Amino acid sequence: MTAPIISIQQVSKMFAKQPVLDQISLDVQKGEIIAILGKSGCGKSTLLNLIGGFEQPSSGQVLLDDEIVMKASKRCIMLMQNYGLLPWRSVQKNVELALEGTGLTKIERQRRAQHYLKLVGLENRLSALPSELSGGMQQRVAIARALAIQPEVILMDEPFAALDTFTRYYLQDELLAIQKEEKTTILLVTHDIDEAIYLADRIFIMSPNPGRIHRELLIRSTKPRDRSDSDFQHFREIIFNEFQFTHPQNAVEYNI
Image 1 (cartoon, rainbow, N blue to C red):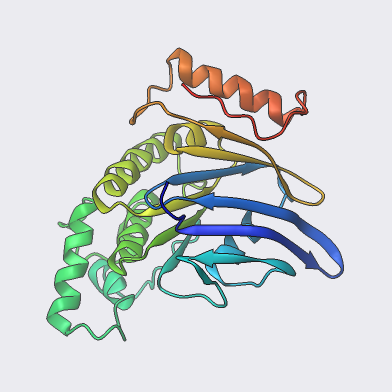
Image 2: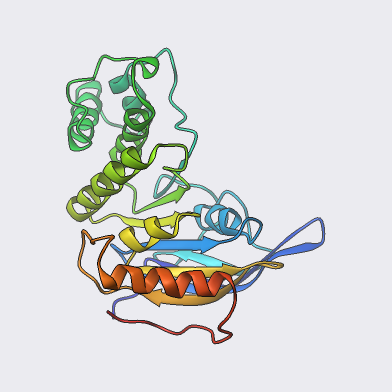
């Protein structure tokens, strides 16, 4: 197996002398989609912030391509529920904003922004303002903006939580199609069990107080997955049982 693109090594985090994360260790391979599931307060978002360099661990280390993550960089981009679009800038200009200061010419910025907006299906809305778009479209602009930077890793913190079910399903399919083309590594924090099973190659279930890796699930089913088939329901049952903590064993893999 090749060296991981992300290596989290014995990471712990304290806030106000209270342990939030305890001895987190996991590796992520290039091109994987990893989902992190857990109840509120188990430190999922804190873990993403440590990976992205927005915070530093109290002990342990996070490595990106064998380099210790000391600060945020454009190699690793965060996507959140709040789309972060500037309301006075057009769709294209919002995407181009992420490319300012990169050394690209104006024409190069325009072409790259248009390429990724086409990838998310918004090539006909380049001049629209964010207020003229649905929530799902605004999230697609945010995805295009993140992709335009061409990061090695995209961190997603509940990115589809505010959307209705059908829009969320559509964007999940869009994300899979884009990830297949771009080969981007994605780490996704979600409370949605079905979303984790549908998208992820591996799921890490966290337990709280302090946050620890409780179990790892490896999902070998091909994508896109059928939410109604027996394999999908099997993983749902496993995860529901884990949230009830009915099985104490750690780090068991279920391969289907």
